[in-house]
Image (tube, rainbow over all chains, first blue to last red; front, top):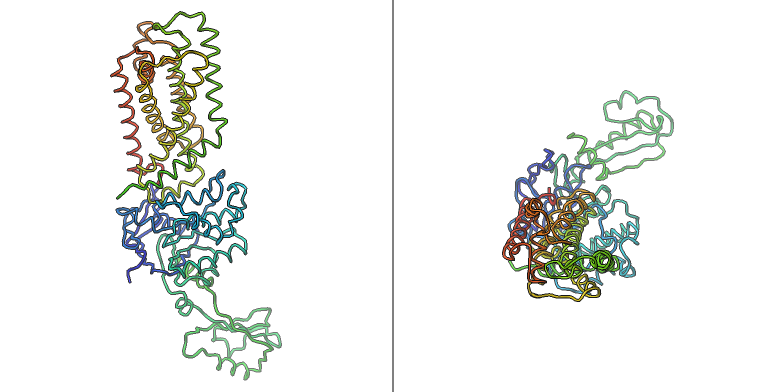
Length: 308
Length: 255
């Protein structure tokens, strides 16, 4: 199937000479949830802003469902909803008016039922006649999402949607994202909270210094790059590792009370049996053990650091 | 592709509701200042003045007073209208919406021009309380009102795009438009000036606007009506060209 979003050879150099994006190629499949990860200043927002028409690309093309974002900008933009990172709102407008305004801006006739549904979905209905300036930061964030959904977009961009947002709103937001996905909406999000990408995303892209350095199915990424660690809590304190165990990649921590063994979860032989046998023959007894799989966050930190 | 009329409407309604929210300020202010002008120039000084071009002085200043408000209001409304979303960041939504530059301009400039035409008519109504009005060419009067409001709203739109701070927003109306209007014959016929200053005045574009407007009221003017009309249209064209250039290059809107 044709990707809903296709980015080819996209570069952006700002007038200041800053190169924000370099030769980005990326296809987003219809209906997927794609998480774009990257440190601050990596080019996440620039990429989103180009696709949405706020920043002009230097080179390259972007098509949304086959519509070029420059030549056929009306058709392309009509499909896209954008929730920006900054909380920018019209202070004096009421919630309902500002959300209806967004729908009109996207060329759609009034539809109070749809607006009501969106406001209710985001727990904003009670606040529909409040002015924006009377709302808390979290409520404003909800309004920005409502504005982006007012014109029933097929692709939704969430730029750092949960920055500075309380737990309740975060959970509401993820419920909403799941519901949108059920309706076939494609969701592309950037986030700092990697656990969210881990929980929500189908695929993950990592961007660093304007380049996409990795795009992978989340499960695949976790499988490929994920490492496991076995931690053994020792019965007696060790001052140093016995010679027989020195070459195993073992680490002695916790003041000599813990042995940490890192292994590749994909390997045919994890070496655990041998390790435990060797420990027994060295007379090292342990009181407890646990294993831990590295999270997406660990993987991400490794990736960004490795290639720095 | 067809015009996105719902977007034009949305922007227009948004801008007009901003105007109505501050209705007291935006309607009362011109009424009060017009009344003050009439008290000072019409009653206090005007009673000691002879007729100007066969028109009582109190009546003579009506077109100039309307023009003064029309120019400053058009510029202020339109420049603020587009500057504020840039300043607040809400412009992102307009930039990411399927709207063409023509639609954005129609919405913002249309609303700003509507407001200043409304204010112009309010001033006219206020003036009617002080002097018996006389309008020889009402259709031309409305045509000049409309053309001037649109032209200077476009000019204000350009300023709102150019400004990178609130001071710059005030700069042009305060330092250029107000002096040009006062010196452009709002309160006198430029023929009353010594020959040298008369010639200098002809370099002031506002002279042609006021002169044309006054012709619509009293059938007489400082310069030929055709020249006034041509100058107004020329300025309109210049503003349209500037707006077109801005959207084509993305100047101060997009990076």
